[in-house]
Length: 261
Ligand code: PGA
Image 1 (tube, rainbow, N blue to C red):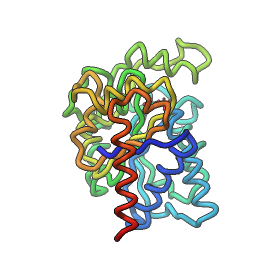
Image 2 (image 1 turned 30 degrees about the vertical axis):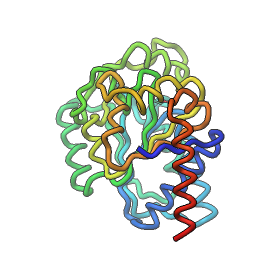
Image 3 (image 1 turned 90 degrees about the vertical axis):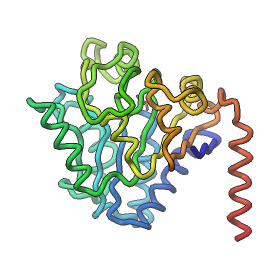
């Protein structure tokens, strides 16, 4: 895994934005996997800025979101549908029909999840998947103990996740207990993964995910076996990495090497 450590949240978002922009330039019909939560908000702001100022177009892009709460209507302000439209989609030129987010209102989750998997496959698979990490090490909503081969399905949220996410809800009781999430196996099949994390609160779990054993107890640790994963971390989130100095040195060397070509 490439580990890029940057000064702060702003730089993390800009570096992540550069990668998305570069992949879009190479493939304007990019199949882009997206995540919700506080972490990617800066990246989405950056994508909106690029669209407005640098004429970056999303007209041919298809997006697949990682997850959605079960039981929330798309117009519920806590739903990931609402989040994505407010924070990204309504500000860029992506056609509505190119946007895929798990249906939190489905009456037949099993059938829906299979359909979602099929749509990803029909799109040619995910080119680039953006992921964050939960306090318990989850990627998507794949809570500890999720099969590392899992596919899109319903997961029961961990108590810690419900507590973490209650900050977005009026009352902790309002947080749904279930979600539809891409599986760990689904995420791993993306051709490239862009992992973003920031803040001191994430440093211990980031270290476990990047340098600990690959384990279903920290599902984000699966990124270690992906052939093309990049972690962009701010200094605070990188603080507990044992090999931090090496990652920085390796990035410096890579930049020097590129310049010499
Ligand atoms: P956060 O959530 O970006 O709000 O920290 C990350 C996650 O739960 O995956």
